[in-house]
Amino acid sequence: MTHTPPPPFCFHQGTEPLLISMPHAGTYVPPALAARFTPEARQVPDTDWHMERLYAFAKDMGASVLVATHSRYVVDLNRPPDGASLYPGQSVTGLCPVDTFDDTPIYTAGDGPDEAEIAARRDAVWAPYHAQLRAELDRIRARHGLAVLWDAHSIRSVLPRFFEGKLPDLNLGTANGESCDPALAQDLLSLAKSAQGYTAVLNGRFKGGYITRHYGQPGQGVHAVQLEMTQCSYMQEALPFDYLPEVASRMQPHLQNMLAAALAFARQRGDRH
Image (tube, rainbow, N blue to C red; front, side):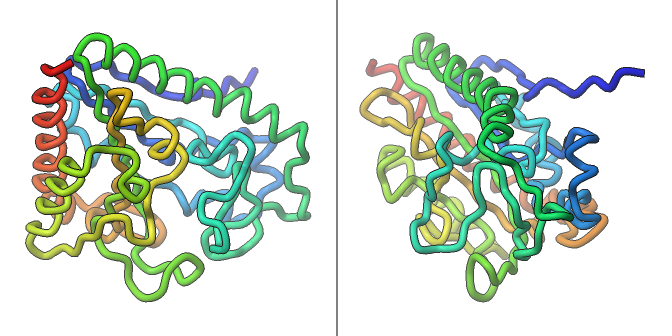
């Protein structure tokens, strides 16, 4: 029986000027690659789990949704194609990571990918995802005059490798104000800070990865925002990484309010183009 890998992404085209990208939601690892992984790495613990379920309401809002299928351990879709660090001087994981967020090896024998393998993964998975992302942003902008890109992420709330203490629940990133209009960023921050029971910050530890920084071009009609959310806000942060519907249902209205604000901004500003 021939093993057939999934396509690099799943895509739903919406009707509104909003695209939600989920580059770290994938869990697929090709069997031959998984055989080189440690038992821990095979659990793909650094996945942005259950993003589609958490944002299920977005399709009803008319948003387009682009979801990765492959694990970030195969190739990280939110890193530059050349693998350059997005946070110089700080601990980061690479385009094809060799260690987990807990700083443990991904590969049993230390046989991480060489340049040729990295290039092959980039061509097979990274490039198609970004081609679809670019094509949809261009389509939205041509139709509506403006596009908002929402890059949806989640992470464990306590990760000493990357930050001290507990992370704020809602981490909005706009590349220090470069990837979207300041008015939109402030609207979103106000909504996040008014979410009772949660903490929020703008351009704190997570300012937006490659997707936010590369595609966010306000002067060219694309406004990009990253939301890095604590996983304890909607799921179990440890194995088996279960979705917690009651916990998630308290967070979802706040996500919906922020996306509604992004849509309102896009409609208002798009009319001027």
